[in-house]
Length: 261
Image 1 (cartoon, rainbow, N blue to C red):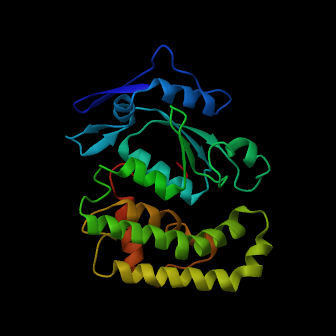
Image 2 (cartoon, rainbow, N blue to C red):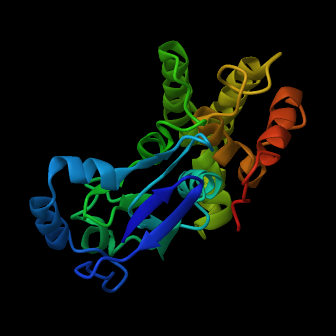
Image 3 (cartoon, rainbow, N blue to C red):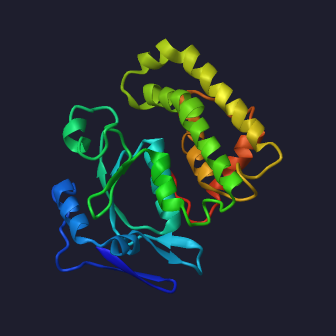
């Protein structure tokens, strides 16, 4: 499926030779054949067309998102797509039952994790923050200034290294794993690490509305995803006034959708 950009209007059109989704998946072989037929400049134009008036990017390909409705990492991608007005397909993947991950994702993502994204030319991309950068680059959600771009990455590395391993893991074991005893077994370690991350986030938001510069960015999307549901992992945010005010500001952004949308 390809699109035509016309001012503020995006039309999605299906070419005669376009392959359809089959069994909810895209064939990597079909994708390779498409890439062989596609000249480099054609591929670049298909990847993105810029809507300069809106300051956003409309992508030429309808994409397939391997998704889990309860995953904060998947929610990051869905939230950005909603704010970009990007259409996409989803295939739901269990975060508990993982026995079919190799069959389902083995040719697409060596990490066998969700979110995994497939473009209609067969190329795939994993890791939530990498997907955010691919679609957010060139939009209002990623700064142009090199230092501020590096700050976005700083917060995203922090999220994956110091925040998600405690807050997201506590939430998973307590609320979604079906094995809450695992949460209790790790409770002290998970809460200590999670509160350390929340302390750092509170300091980062002191006297500022958003994490980077003076506007909402991919950094806010990355940290919002699991912070706003931290209570499901037994974290109390009552002692974090800057975080609570920031959560309200993020939820008030145009195009915002909740995690259970």
